[in-house]
Length: 253
Image 1 (cartoon, rainbow, N blue to C red):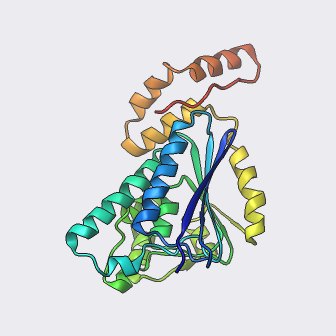
Image 2: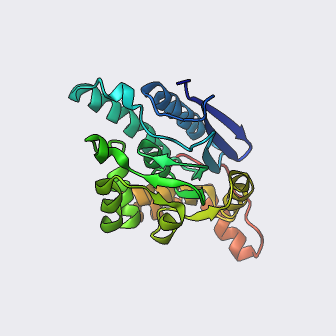
């Protein structure tokens, strides 16, 4: 199997992280997770980025962790692999920009866990989404269980991670796993930028602080911190003066 590459492109206010494998089967080996984490760190350091899209080229979105590598693990190696993935995915979840998983095919195991760490998920109608780890004698290790439970509730979450059976994009849409469905991978390339643009009215600082509050649960502190930002001063002034707001660059929350 050829190696999965992680490519990053930053074009103004939009960052795009792309997984690519010559044979089209994107797998999350330890090296790939490490490279993905470095790409996320680069996005975080680009203050002007307002939306981040995670996408893939080939037959699948992400087929999950590298099972061949994992088959040789003991508990210590497994913990190291889990910590590596959790760091990368937690950093993705805490990015101050809005994040969208553009799912062009199967998102399984660690691939679905990555999508769950994004703010939104847009998938082709033929996509399959699942956490098959139980069929291998495993469980998700990169934050999939708590994120999925928070997103769709305990019943739907348990159906996925206890049965090991995938669901269709349409099924996922019905219970909130997927936000939108499109017909083809080509339609993703059209729809995702439009979806990202729909957030342009929101102040970057407000987005960053709202995301922080969603993670740590401290909405009051985030609300108070809004009043130390240039975006708050600009937004309230623009409202009083009845003019469009001119937002500043997004800070780290």
